[in-house]
Amino acid sequence: MAFSSNGARVVSGSDDRTMCIWDTTTGAMLGRMEGHTSSVISVAFSPNGARVVSGSDDGTVRIWDVTTSAELGRMEGHTKWVISVAFSPDGACIVSGSGDKTVRIWDATTGAELGRMEGHTDRVFSVAFSPNGACIVSGSGDKTVRIWDPTTGAELGRMEGHTNTVYSVAFSPDSTRIVSGSRDKTMRIWDAMTGAELGRMEGHTKPVCSVPAFSPDSARIVSGSHDETVRIWDTTTGTGLGRMEGYTGSVVSVAFSPDGAQPRDSKVRTWRPSPQLSCTQDESGWLAPQDYPSIRLFWYPPQLRPNLVIPPCLLVISKQGYARLDPFSAPLGPDWAKCYRPQSPNRLKSIVIGGLTYFIIAQFLWYYVRPLFLFF
Image (tube, rainbow, N blue to C red):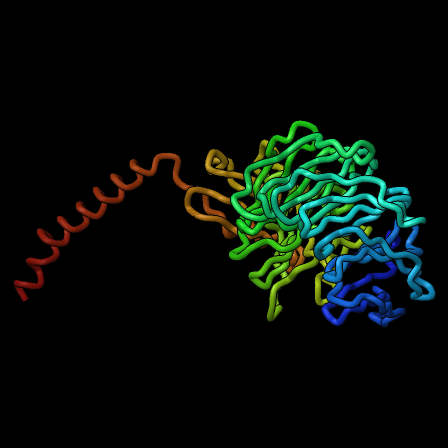
């Protein structure tokens, strides 16, 4: 499943051997493409949205006209099923990954094979061009993520660290980072130049089937899993920002809309992420949105500041627990301050004084008040 570049349409591939194009606003089907002789595993729009490329269990890569649904071309050469396909940023080439362990580049106009990249020792589950068109990334059953030169076919880098099959890979919008999702239930972010692991996201309870892309601002990643959930993650901290549930089966394909506002999943459903805030704290103890420091959301007493950790989400965490802030659903009025009562600066002194006072009163009652009751 994939969005068009303007976010107006979505294309989906199915086990029924067809591809369908949908209107993202109304949900109406706009077109249906038929021709593959087996399941359609992967689909992608061309950059200008005029064409769709598909990869199938029948071993072929095919190009389709979005307006007429006509087949424009067919690329044959893979000896096993085609698991992943993608257009180059200029729309001139197509890259495909296959169960035959190869990555191949095709001319999007003539269908000619332009190059072949070999080196993976297991099936290639995911391929993608970098947004600048300089590199291709692939993820494989051999547990590696590899970067290739699309002109020479040379391997430029290899990222190792996953402990099981890499199902999905994608570049960040600026081409500097790569995200991968794996059967080991984790997602990892890599430096595209050095191959160093920059971060790891954990939380899914079953294999991660799809991590198709960063959000357009590179701040979030959306993932789909066999655990029947779609999750959104912060790319800087690896923190989970949201979870969409309600599925009765594996989520094998997810994507952000081009404006980053709506993740979409393999059931062709649209979700809108909950608003998130990155907070900072000033010297007086106020928490404020990082982008709007003049707006005060929450006051954390200065005495407790040494125990405070502020992640880029809506949690205030201390050694005693945490508080979840929800400024979007509840008004903040003047009465909020009444919930805070400062501790005594010398708690031990207060306890001692209280104890002595209790002791003196008890002695007075015992020696002076009790005899009066005994006399009567």
